[in-house]
Length: 368
Ligand SMILES: Nc1nc2c(c(=O)[nH]1)N[C@H]1C(S)=C(S)[C@@H](COP(=O)(O)O)O[C@H]1N2
Ligand SMILES: [Mo]
Figure 1 (cartoon, rainbow, N blue to C red):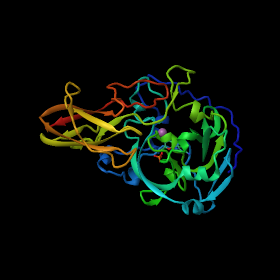
Figure 2: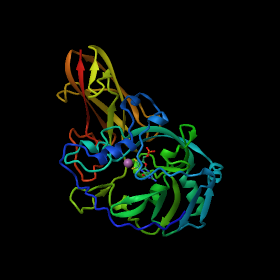
Figure 3: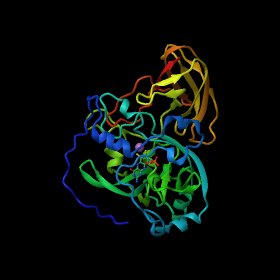
Figure 4: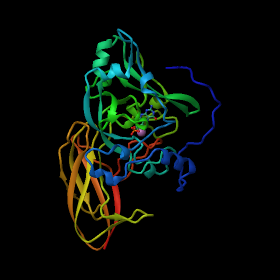
């Protein structure tokens, strides 16, 4: 891949968090490029490909599969350059993985970080087919001084006053996790352009930013990588100029498929009185969800939902709850607890990039 990027003067964009309650045209522009999974799709075990959420920072590159090459460089015993056919000839596995954007819930923070304004829909589960990264790294040979693997996508654009490629790194130990895949198929079909075709990284249990799309280069490096998507964002930073802890694995969260039917414009839910089956999904990155509780009275009382085990590691779990809906208004809430004892907070925990907001969902319902 070409390494030289052009230089442009900064655009002097103001992206400080805002108290303005009105969403901007820039946010609308991002929201219509990066669509979410409609929450009624929580009813599918595997999200149909066209309903899976999307997050792309720059433009979706048009990559010709025939000419595509993956470069493995840096502190390896043997550098490799592989075409898609070379990769597909290697042992392949299919994994069902729940992916969530680290910015999911950002629009619910006050003041509001200025970025893709996700409500709660930056989520999806897919069956990814590819070859384990671990075997490829072992074949090439991980050099003694290798600390991190740096993954580079083919897309480029300007952010933080600089033209850059989308790049993320993983500690070598995390890159060697047996779950990490170089994926060329999604739900049994060739990986579509918007999801990173022809080749992407899939890092199960992590927020989506780790799963680099249009993956063209892997470099084993002797020191921590300090690209923008490692230090300038994807950090739990609060104060301006503060670095903050890195964002890594998904925090525990449950969502409910909104019951009944919606009012078109407000999306208010309209539910006939009587027995209502509430259903949804819960996940916790690499951890297991051990409890899902539902409140149908705005958080005054909570009752335990029936929770299914996960179909695979790093895959969401189905839950169900029988609700007797009585006429009037109700606020439904659902919260999950993982096997490490982490439970979703009732209110957002603020940080300046709007990361990891796993505050409980509230769904307002009119029962007739
Ligand atoms: N090359 C590249 N990879 C990328 C991104 C990107 O903008 N460019 N976005 C990341 C982010 S923030 C997320 S949440 C996931 C989204 O993957 P999806 O669009 O397939 O759902 O891709 C990640 N990989
Ligand atoms: Mo993301």
